[in-house]
Structures are given as C-alpha cells and as structure tokens.
Amino acid sequence: MALHRVSPVGVLAPEPDGDRLVHPDAGLPGPERLRHGYAQSKWVAEALVAQAAARGLPVTVHRPTRISADTATGICQPADYFWLLLGACAEAGPAPTVDGPAFDLVPVDHVREAVVALTRRPDTVGRTFHLAADTLLPLSTAVSWLRELGYGIGDTTAAAWRTRVEERRLPRGLTLLSTVRDGPGKAALRYDTGPTRALLPDTVPTALDRDCSRRPCPTSSARKPSPRRGDPRSVRRPDATATTPSCVHAST
Image (cartoon, rainbow, N blue to C red; front, side):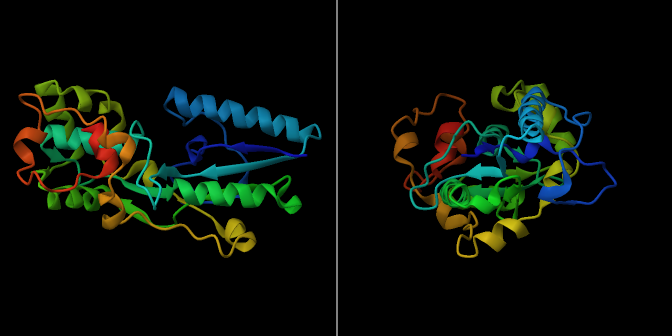
C-alpha cells in the first residue's frame, strides 16, 4: 500500500528567470523563495514525504493548482484566496485588473476523480502528478462576470488598489494587501500535466466559465447576510433578481 500525498503547487517557487513550465519530475526546489507561512508549512510536509520515500516508503504526490467550485453544483470553499479577492474587489469598487493576476482553477470534482483514479494504479508509485486546468483565468475576466450581475466594479492597477484599500481601511482588502502585487507574479507559472493526461486521457478538467460561476450554491446562499449600510452590495448591485455566483455570496 502506498502513501498518497495531496500537496498544493504553492510549494513550488522557481527562480524568476527559470522555466515557467513546471515539470512534476523536476524535484522539490528549496523553500527560500516561499513568502508565506502556509506555503512554507506545505513545503515542509512534502519534504518529509520525500525523505520517507527515499527510505523506502512507496509514495505518490498529487499537486493540484487552485481548487475551484464543483462544476455540477457550484459548491466551493468560500475562504479560498480567489473568492476572497473577488469579494475585496466588490468592497473596494475597482479591481486590480490592469496588471492583475491570472488563476489556474481546477474544479474540485476533477481533482477528486483524478486522485482516486491515480491511487488505483500501481504504476503511479514513486511519481508526482500535477492536476491543473491548463488554462489561466485572468482576474479581469472573473470581474467582468460580476459586472454582468450588476456589480459596479472598475479597473485599476495593483498599486492604486492597495492605496485605496489602505486609505479607506476596507476590512476585506486589508487582509489581502500583502498578496496583491504588481504584475502577474506566480500565477504566470504553468504546470506540466502531461504525465497525468497520459495515464488518465478520459479525465479532462472543465474550465471555470461564466455559466459555472452563476450556479447557486446551496451551502452559501443559506448564509447570505443582509447588506449593511455602506455594504457594496447595497449600492453596486442594482439588479436584485440577478443570480450571484455561489462563492461570491460568502466572500462579499
């Protein structure tokens, strides 16, 4: 029986001038370029698994990119960074789309199916597999979907967005200040899914699109709070009959 470790791609921090396509068999790079404690702790966990593998434990590592909503139900993790950022953009008014990031969002149902299928194959032992959508979703595209739902969100640079959040002391944005930087940053990385596709040719992820983002989420809609005075939902969403994206409910 093998140990299967699900580890985020956030453990990877290649050199700025290195290959932007990250190969799963390239080995785990050092942690020196990891900025946040979460990624550092995940790196330590994967490094320990690598040590166990070197001592003879059969190990398979699965590295998903940012896990997004279920394509059938819209159920997601509303505390994930992507949804928190959308909520902060609705709160601030403008969004840092001019030089904003792009996200490789892989649906949770694809991750589930792929991991289960890989664990049932003995030829995956000792290997690492990337689970990715292979398509980047720009923040500007996600914001455009919110505009279609009635949110009056403009466009700005990352620097101007940070200044606005700091000056107005916007609570949602303040928690994300250190993560919103100029330029695409780590989101520009691509993750090689060739080995995964070779073993699972029929397991193909569905990209998050506008229709998927509109699916109501039963877990979040039940908790949707009433807009408070000053809440951006009360002034930037004139169409009260529009369907709010499930995960934006909880984050905005």
